[in-house]
Amino acid sequence: MKKSILELIRYRELVRNLTLTELKLRYRDSALGFLWTVLNPLFYLLILALVFSKIIRLQIPGYAIFLFAGLASWLMIQQTAIIATGSVVNNQTLIRKIYVPKLVFPVSNVLARFVDHGILVVLLVVFMAIFGARFTWALAFLPVVVLIHFLGAFGLSLLLSVAFIRFRDVQNIAAIVFQALFYATPIIYSIDVLPEAYRPLFLWNPFYYYVETLRWPVYHGALPPWNIVGIAAAISVALFLTGWAVFIRQEKNFVFSLS
Image (cartoon, rainbow, N blue to C red; front, side, top):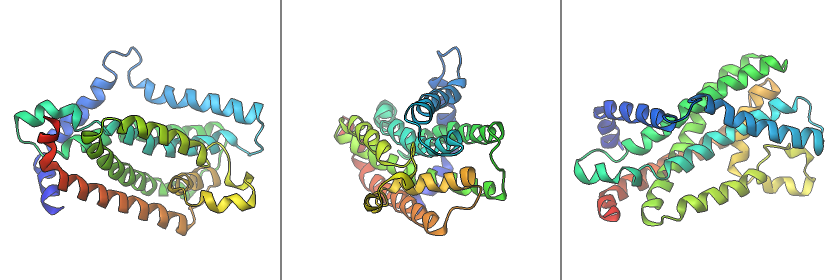
């Protein structure tokens, strides 16, 4: 790990340039550009809020902020992992021509996506002001929450990017799994509305802990319980270390796998 980190530091200009290029290319031919970073989740939020607060009528006070906090947490992991899955394969031409640390590609992908997520978190705070949510000192915990999400998303991205080199169905499979997990995670509903007998099953879902780390400071106006923070952090560290180890062990075979 030390050697890989030192290589990333030496190639930090390449990481920076790849990150900027990723951001520019994503919105290059779009009239609204970076506004889509805001408009996409806002449209998603509007549809979900309309369906579940007005049609299905979930009785959750301040539902817009409740939903937005859960959705922001989910997008940090889901969007990052899905997009970064192809980070190595999409740069196979460069990998074949010159030596660069293969880690620079998933790193730049994840960093670019978290620029978007940073904007999303700022927008969430703006929504808190619009809807009259409480601003408390618990919001100072948000950088820690984002870091926990970043480590988890990065580790998962490394694992998926390695798997995608050998099995090109991985990205589609991951998208389907994420879609199923979205409804199995208390994002659009509260775990309190579930029958008592089913609640322990949802506690096995790692995304529950990510959502709660963000929802507590934003929606409840308090620090999340330390057992929730601890579990979310442990999952993220485990994903990060596992993803890093697998990526470093397999990267010497990347050129041959891509050939």
